[in-house]
Length: 195
Image 1 (cartoon, one colour):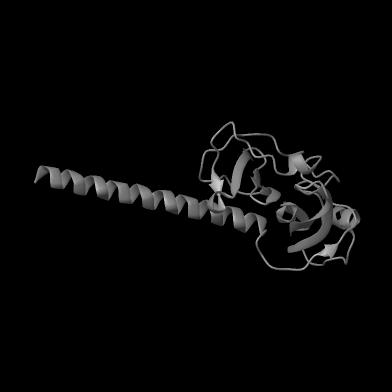
Image 2: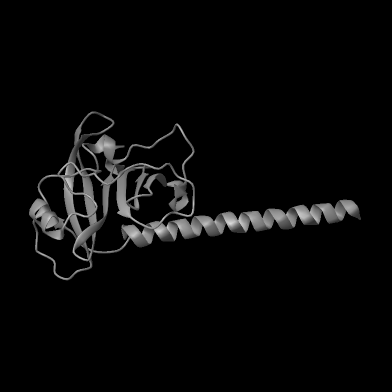
């Protein structure tokens, strides 16, 4: 009887832990999706020159394998850093993509390394807090109006296939504008055509 009670207690505690872990992941995903709006629908204005978080495609999606960092979206994304002073986060995604997201958000419900991200910018100079006028002057396209909206841009990134042939990776840049200033930058590069 004691063994049965011990097993039942252990199963109950395991169920609570599993439910808590699922709730934490779900709330972390909601936190991320709400801030970045990366997964919402919309068309993008074509731009001639691609852009990257940091200076290149490599910095756009550098996956840190040296430490265990919080996963997002079923493990496709990794929350890498959070700036507790400026409330800015950095996340990356891989698996047939090279994607990075820099975004303003409240403190995440997980432990993540602290870093100053206030001056982290795209190769073309956009950062969190940039006015929409800088987005429009950088990327062009039709001007958007209002204080809060999502702007999208598309480009092609020159690359080379696994067989050594030239390729163009499709890129989608998603910019969230709140109160007239950039609150999130997500740069998605599709690598599926390289294989």
